[in-house]
Image 1 (tube, rainbow, N blue to C red):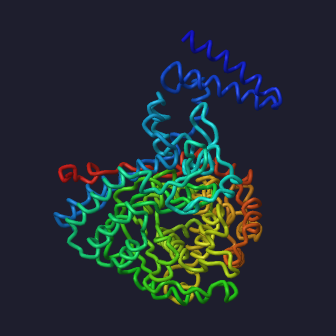
Image 2 (cartoon, rainbow, N blue to C red):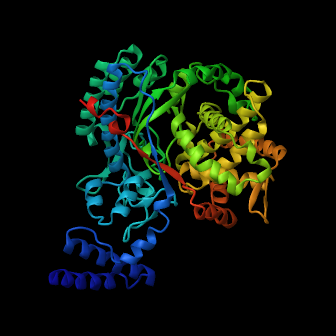
Image 3 (cartoon, rainbow, N blue to C red):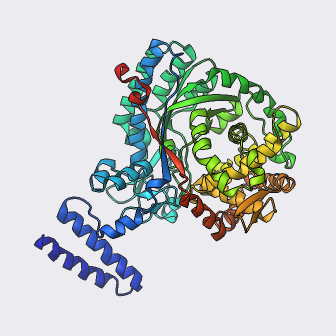
Length: 575
């Protein structure tokens, strides 16, 4: 320890010399980092410099999540289907480990350095030391800001360096950017960077395929086994879209690009293991046939809706029995629209998967309690699960509408809007989902009172806004809230602290925002989207005060799962 403090003196001296031209705050940061490095070297693992500081960082964290047991009725499954589930869950565990590497780095070393069990548990929920529901604020003493590019890029890489580099596949969804021995940037394909883990997952997919009695599922599993070791996913995506009669499903691999907030280029590993609700799915089938007319009716000029969605688009309801990786980090996904490949979408459409059991848990334990605090008493009867389900479902449908390629030669919308593409896409899906509910309601295809959908939509903004404004979904929620506020779609009663929806103005705001977003996407208007995000993707003080009231009432922000073969009662089925 004496040697460590001698080293500390040396580092402090170096810090002072290097900081002579720095501002005082930079000097302090330099000295703080030196102290942390020495303590780590002396003790063999990270220790908090102040127990009180660490406790302050964790205030209110424990209450943010409520536990939900993730299960479903497996009584309709065959013996081989039951045997398949533990194998699929093992694949999920592999993808979970890969996401840790993408989001943070060395999971085991990091968690080993956390002595406090509560902090360690919260780190596991967040896949690192940054609170995903609080704008990625660090909750571990001594840890700095989360890199915008997570661990997809070198921490010391600048945008200018990346953009000036001439690297094959640098914009690919499936490459890591690293440095070679000469400190030059290189791109490393996922299938090389994670070769050992992916080969293991591939073998498990083949093992599951051997048990598959459904031929559509068997073909998909075999193609996916090949895809994850080659980073060529298109054929397996096509096969996934061809599945109609399967009862078991798995979505696995590098899927969404939300974790990359530097450019939005890199896809993160994830897994959902799903059991299809055959009855609910059949009830939803009729909506797929209505998509072409919904596309034609979008409230925007013809050139912004000229693309035709794939005719094979599907709607299906599932109970999810295992989450892993990206989808399990922070706020939990309750509906999925895939594949993301624009070519597959144009040829085949997409499948909108509603995760019914997770959705119900969020409605009962979070949305209903929120409405009792923030929605005007006279409108609370309009908060319904059917409206929540429909709004969520058509959010996913709306991902397939609009335009995927810019109208002026700027490439795909995703390429043109870069790091803002995901946030604007989520904003589009939110607002067009409500637009489609209204149109289908007018046509008699959706039942119930339209006020149910508008009121539940507004209450859902309060639920989703609590995820913070740092994620793509968070930015989309804030853009919508602030835009609706400016349009007078709701008013806040100062006496009761509740919000009352103006249904007529809500419809006007919905149409106006739909047009704005679709035009920005079609034009590939990066600068316009930058202004929209800068001005609107923020939480106003009054809203934050109201969100704090929800926390004071003990209403959780999101859910965390008890899941796995033991929860499902399949412990004896493990291979």
